[in-house]
Image 1 (cartoon, rainbow, N blue to C red):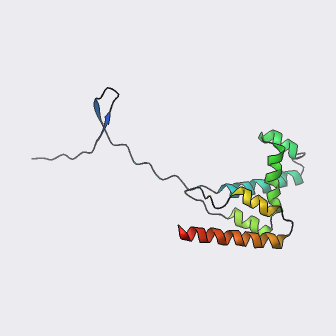
Image 2: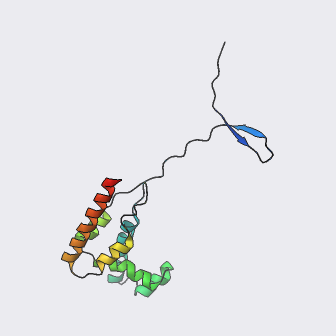
Length: 138
């Protein structure tokens, strides 16, 4: 005697009938994504380059072209005020399979408001330590 082994799923219709269907394939894990702040840092560097080389006239032109407010363009460009090593750290962030709530753009912008790079670095180090401690507790 031959045995046939098959897997199937049943689903109930709105009328109470049952349908037999082949099993749906398991959804693959979402691909890792770059953190939002890494993308914004790269964008800030690119926009700063466009302004420096005269390829765009001013921030207002960037805002019109991108369809965002001038205030948002300013927020993004202010990331270029970060110390170079902090900018590098942001650009080198590893892609994640999930969104990291520990590293928020608002916090990074707050660091960029201080013109003193030494103070920025101290604040950045404290932030990194807090993230590492928080990740270790999970």
